[in-house]
Image (cartoon, rainbow, N blue to C red):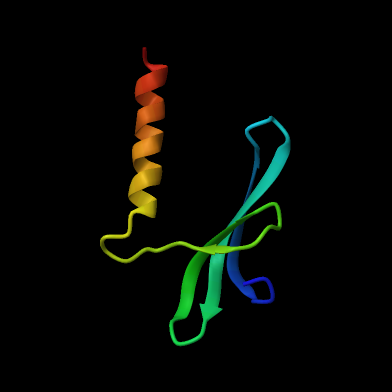
Length: 75
């Protein structure tokens, strides 16, 4: 995915786990035979596809981790 054109990019400035500035980019990339798919990359690194189909575990795992963080912070 390094040479692909990204479409509808959204960039979020944040920090990494060591407190250093980091950019997270989400957008669409064209994949052969599949049209456009959602993808994510951090600080210009390699992009990864975000499985968004029913039963995909990535978004559920992110949601559960955020909820865990809220619960842990409330104690």
